Length: 267
Image 1 (tube, rainbow, N blue to C red):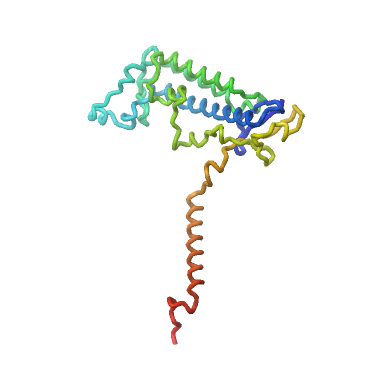
Image 2 (tube, rainbow, N blue to C red):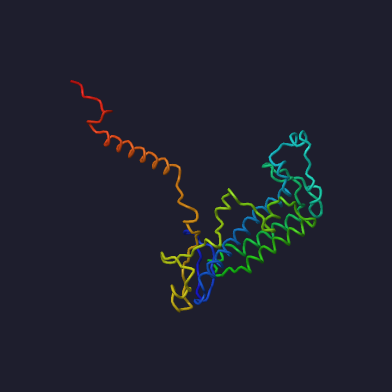
């Protein structure tokens, strides 16, 4: 089995094994799925930490409002009345105003916290140092553990707009977020090794040879052509100034000293 040390940029992600005979179409999709699956686990862990501290998500039309504003607008958190944590809630205000402040009690909080740590360990980058390969089955196991913990603490479920439930139902909306930029679409994923793209039409052995004990560093990225060239604001301003200067210089050359628009020199 060829051992792939998968990186994004210069940052280690995970180890993965594959036979040299593997079609790169299949391998590229497999790597992208594990990569994106790990991101999903990370997003869930982050939101579940907030769930443990401050309870479920408020309805979108109540988020960020003060208690007085909610009362004045006569808004009601109907899902908050249904989705009560097992064993009762402990009030802990969410200063950001995203969650309803009805946090699980200490026992249920620890159920969530313990499961979060276990899920993080499964997909941790430290697995690279330990020489442990991460598979899609391991990612699914981490997701199942997280789902199970939420069901224990919230037997009545979560509101349909809670990002945790949306993640479990694969309905998450990551548009316009940094989390969305981190995701790599399977159809647009590319693997690179030794400054060469591992083309999907070939096999892994076409690049690394027949030795099944080969170890390579494979970098995953999204096909840059599908995203278009990206420029920073300073780069865009510089290009704009350069274009203006070129246009001005060209105009001067065209007019020349005998142009009807050119001024006569003083006598």
